[in-house]
Image 1 (cartoon, rainbow, N blue to C red):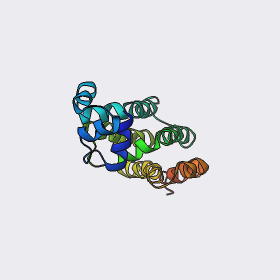
Image 2 (cartoon, helix red, strand yellow):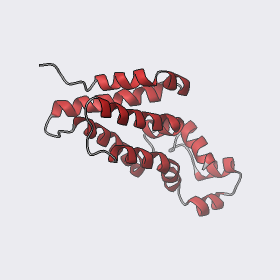
Image 3 (cartoon, rainbow, N blue to C red):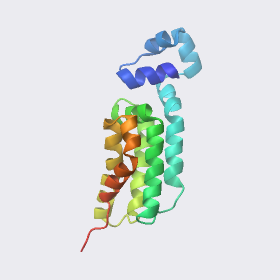
Length: 168
């Protein structure tokens, strides 16, 4: 598992072979295949905890009240990304991550935006909600863990500004 995290996050899923994983783990290639199955199985196992936690966060409330509950849910989601920052950055940024794994991540992103928009019939609200979620993800991909922690509240507030109700 540690070899997978190290190699997938540093050189990418697509550029990592079972032989690379075996070498870093100090075991034979057949041992890797026996214990983890395939690279896709390893990627799913590595990311399973983070994705399950994100799913729990976005599945818990049926909808969120603006702005207080939205800020709480966004904060929980953001905090969980920071907790597994290296893995989160890899999942979001490596286009070679297996489709099943990326689909789970993209589903949490869509569901978080859906909680905020709470009205599938309002395209403008849906677009603003996706912009708000993107406002969480960009800093996660660009800033260090200390910067994210130091500016947590500012980053959440800035992301949610994207969704602030439009003035008539």
